[in-house]
Length: 424
Ligand SMILES: O=C(O)C1=C[C@@H](OP(=O)(O)O)[C@@H](O)[C@H](O)C1
Ligand SMILES: C=C(OP(=O)(O)O)C(=O)O
Image (cartoon, rainbow, N blue to C red):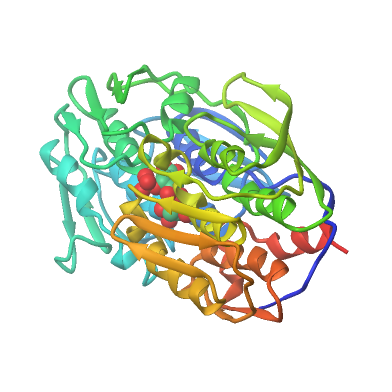
């Protein structure tokens, strides 16, 4: 994929629906009684994997030109899968569905692509096993493929060693099928979409600090869900608007849940000109974001903010390479276990462009402001890497091309079209 040069980005953009919220809407809609209508659903490959898994368990899910109708059958309404469940490239599908499958009365198997088959699943197997679940990694390496024989579950309190919404959600979902109140405490609060949406469907989830608890056997009822724009997808346009000279972009209806808005806080620290308009704090908070070209400087990103911007760190690394001064990213070890090792992959590719970047055990150090040149970038089939370097490619001297640039389909199928529409 060759990246075209653009200047003076102008116009409005509505980014696709939030990936985390889209997955959850399909899952919880399937477990609710009645028809859940989802608008602005993300039709990225990951969320389509979630739809395909629930269809295989007997849930009728219609897609009418992007409006999704999930004909849910209630908490105990799933049927034994007609086939192996294919989670594709999606960590969210794998870890959340495992919590649901652990409490069913049938056996299921999960498989997925090469990337998902190397991502750690022990983090969900450990709490599920302590709830009495019967879950095995078929190859014995604590990765997918997984075999889950549904089982009555015991309620637990789980002290999670990682701040991960996928782990938290897995345990809470299994908790719905357990014999008492199940709770999870995480070291730092991760995104809370599961807690918000399960309550919206009628469950009793309470949150106190970094602990979330759920009462078992909820009756979930079908709802209408409008998915906000994904701030993780908006990140590329925010960065482009800030970095490409002469730009002014209005991003409409972006999700700004405080457990996801760390990027906006980091941009502000770097000197960004971003104005929030039409802020709506009902349910999942949203706002329009007006982004204007700004001269950025380095900053330090670490501690409690990390889970609120974990997927935006590849983009932050590119922004830091174009900003004046030093940026330190730390406490972000989780980057090593995403679709690629995002610490090494960002360091390798930014170095190819001439950036001064040093990978560390839990992040990276970037001395920004050097002129960057074009290069051949390896996305390693990681959608966030591809999109981050597409923005770098607008700004560097000379041509930049991205190997397997079409992996953006995982979370943003129309990414290149939307980007080129804004530029001259
Ligand atoms: O719960 C979710 O929807 C997600 C949680 C995060 O993963 P972890 O929970 O592994 O941090 C994030 O990286 C992923 O893109 C989506
Ligand atoms: C890490 C990501 O997703 P998942 O874990 O669902 O594969 C991501 O989208 O950046």
